[in-house]
Image (cartoon, rainbow, N blue to C red; front, side, top):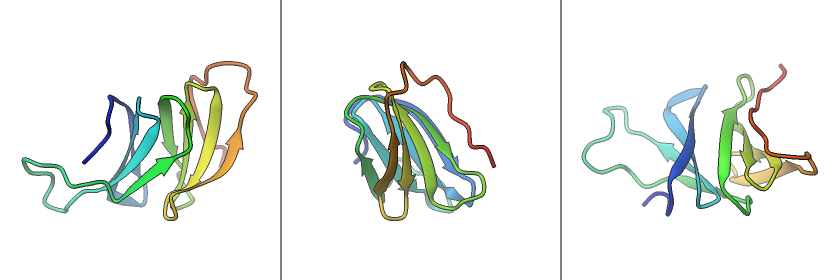
Amino acid sequence: NGHRAAVTDTEWNPFNSNVLYTASDDSTINVWQLPDEGVGETAPAPVGTLKGHTKTVTLLRAHPTAANVLASAGKKPCVKLWDVEKCEDKITLSELGGFVQDLAFNY
């Protein structure tokens, strides 16, 4: 139901406390809608998968003031901005000169 490799980062949606994003060594980001009563013995299936990284996704940051905007960084040095609602990669920043160690939004 989830990732095919280890989870490398997690991030909660600041607009919906039931939505969790997970990054993975499998180069994907999953979007999870968790039930109000919490997760039982089995986790629900992801409601979306963001695909576009070619190597491990290492960092996730949800935009603090724009709903459904997520930034991710990967081992192949790049940063992607996603429209989570549509599961689309909107912007890719590459040629960064090395491994991305942190992400933050300037708002």
